Image (cartoon, rainbow, N blue to C red; front, side):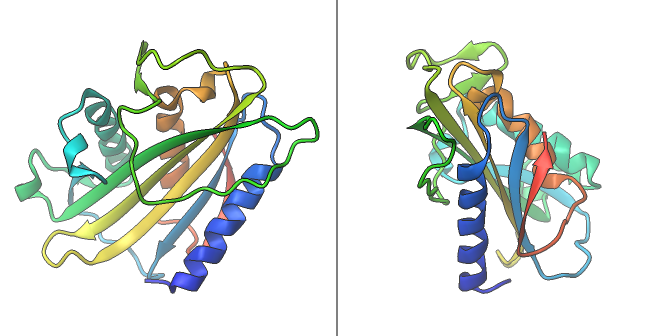
Length: 202
């Protein structure tokens, strides 16, 4: 895989791009992917959460279905159970907020590596956890990450993350609503350019 320094630089670029973007009901995502620069063999795949405790939650199962379908469109074959999969797809989704600034831009930085299923997010569809009304002057930052690993040796063959911003109260301020669009953006033209942050329309 690419070096830690390269990953850090690309993630910093992702945060900078998001901080400088307009944030109405944003229809763009900043996407960063890493791989070995070789064709990724399609095989059977099973989606698991970053945090194992989230595996049985309704929210994760909704997202897992979305990710499984998207991977299927790229040529992977869904496995019914983990033991039948050659590839494990580890998925996480996070959401945070900041106050909107009149000039656009912020000193935003986003940490990667922990899912927040069941906390301050929607369940998907029309079902939501009542965590309080989003405010129009609030900017909601939604982030997904996905890592593909060989189950046989736990080696990572591909990983990526996609992030978007939206005004509080807009459609994309709901994580349950925006996850399918972010997943599509992340897997579009799979495996995508490695080590680059690109802006993709949702």
